Amino acid sequence: MKICFVCLGNIVRSPLAEGLFRHLAEERGVSGKYQVDSAGTSSFHVGEEPDPRMRKVARRKGLEYTGRSRQFQPEDFDRFDLIIAMDPDNRRQLLAMAATPEEREKVRLLREYDPQGGEDQGVPDPYYGGMRGFEKVWDIVRRSTENLLDKLEADAGS
Image 1 (cartoon, rainbow, N blue to C red):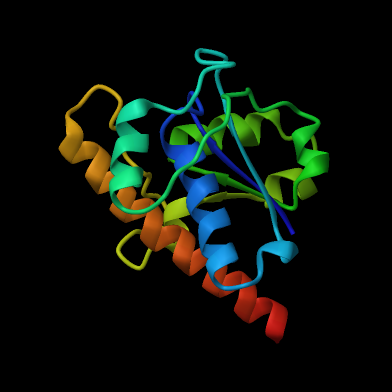
Image 2 (tube, one colour):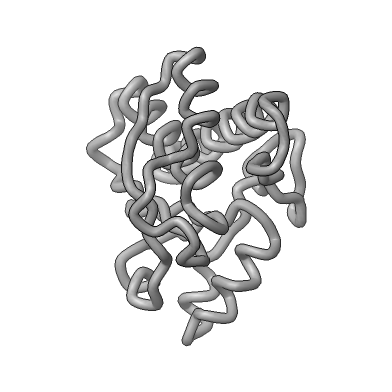
């Protein structure tokens, strides 16, 4: 299963989701079943490392991750089985890029997998706020990626 997590700039939410999903899959011994990546709908931060504030929160919680921002490309629809948007705006941009109904079917919101979220809820972007926002995003992304992995594993077993 190939999964791409997508936010606006690919420096806060989507690289965190990528890193957390990879970490959780490794902890559960199922990492070989998944290929994960992340991207942004914009080119604002292409080539940049993940936001140091988000990495600081993650490091305190036991997760180290790196990477470089990249922009989502139309050919990514062919490369990935599941494309997980961080918020409704990202989802709209991805759906506008999709050329076929099959490509549109691949696009989901991360908070669809959050027991405290919902179908149209997004992961808030903490970029212009304080550290409390980054902590909140960690909690949301952690819950959501755990439940996404649970669902994928349950579906694979049925």
